Length: 121
Image 1 (cartoon, rainbow, N blue to C red):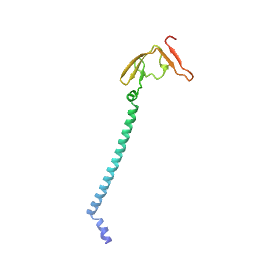
Image 2 (cartoon, helix red, strand yellow):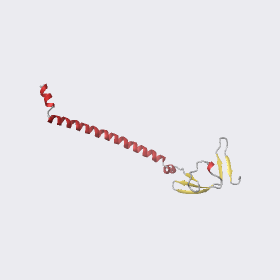
Image 3 (cartoon, rainbow, N blue to C red):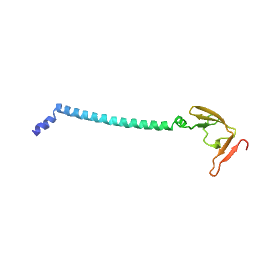
Image 4 (tube, one colour):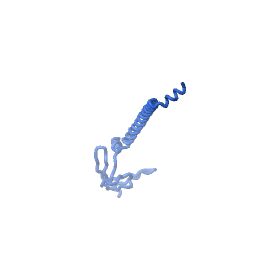
């Protein structure tokens, strides 16, 4: 009996059936794994898109912030040290641009604020 079972396992028909079952099982496992990977990657993409959206200059502007450029709009103004009284600045806001003329400046210091104005010059 045991010998009959062993002999049957060498039967090409039985080998094809066994191989087909292994193939089906492997294909099912592959599909499940690929679906899990795809779902994880989709979640990562959504998360990255949310982060990019939150950091988008347009989204930041919607919260009330703006960007300040020099008169030619070539350089972003990040410090009072980049500006002088009389300069023209361009402010970019969510819904447009404002041209500004610098009349006075107040430099932030640790102890007090130093105010400079056009009449002090």
